[in-house]
Image 1 (cartoon, rainbow, N blue to C red):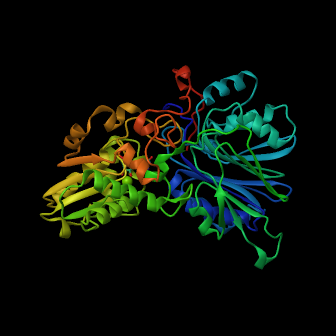
Image 2: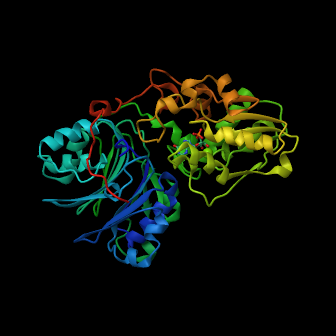
Image 3: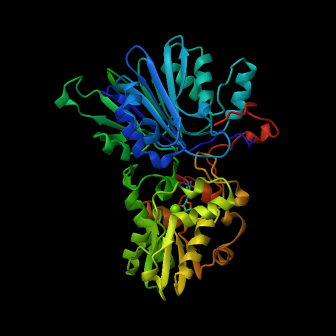
Length: 486
Ligand code: 5GP
Ligand code: MG
């Protein structure tokens, strides 16, 4: 059994008072598919009972069948996409998690990572809580279950006060749909509204919670606002209520959402992700321009930054690499060997335009360096005269413990090598990363204030705003001794 892992990247989506909630939720999850491709699930509430369906694979695999959607009646829902990490990819960990309480049912979907989950879990097990999964989401469920408060919202607040971490949560009870962002607002969550005047029904009371705004467009909802860091939104038939039990804190939104994770058509904290990526690319061109014949993006993640680089430098933008869209993401493959193979399956050189050309390659990040090495080699094999790699993020020198799936530090290329060595290792003529200051400027901040950085940029700085995971206390122990077939 591989090491137990509590952490996962995810997409969450929820509806209050929307007819055919399951079908609409499947659409929302489909728009959030980039946030997780490993498994998906939907729980609905029909006013009396909850209904649940979960499965491994893509949203379309699990919810493409009309019979499945028909088995999920109700106009309130919560849904979840789970990202592939290693190890515990089993159905019992697929969200939303559901539990029965004396006040009714509760379904919880969670994006992010609780860093004190192991400690809490051990204390809960000692108290007699019987864990059914190994996800940290279940820690929430038990904390809510043992809380001495009576209402579900008070119990949720009680649970939130005990957890530490980066998380966005959507929870559905018999009475309300609840959305929470952690006190620093590391993970995203937004509120939207569906106007249903044409179809009748209760006017103005249809609400959406989602990880990103791209999930609003597909279901015909309008953007209302970002849920604030540390805010709990409670939605019921009376409307939307906001609770802020943590007081005000300096926010630290995950800057990597802008760089890579969010979909380019999403708007985060008022800034379109597409625009942000183009601006980072322009900054990169100003900081480390190089004479060249063309700017080539590493598709798809490098495309907007390459456009910004090309526009700023005046060098033509060309699709020198064509991506095959029918391959799963290479990043999620478990072994080095398969990952190497995967990169070749995914990208091909557009030979006809590359012969004898000086190429600026633009990608969003270098993690292990596998992608860059393969792509540079591919450019050379296609006859490129020079290959200059430009990266629209600073060097990834530290692991993320807050919900982005970076490998352990030893596997991060930039943790072990300086830029010069990295250029050699990936085989590029030159290599440059956008500076930290340049990244902040591109996002509309004059500079990075070390005392109060606006973003969580721990993967680039090692400045971790939330205590690190308590997993070290559990070395040599398993969270669960059950090995489940899947
Ligand atoms: P590397 O091959 O260096 O390990 O990974 C770099 C590539 O992975 C880049 O093309 C980048 O777009 C992508 N990438 C960076 N972070 C993530 C992530 O968290 N998840 C996935 N699936 N891909 C990532
Ligand atoms: Mg990429």
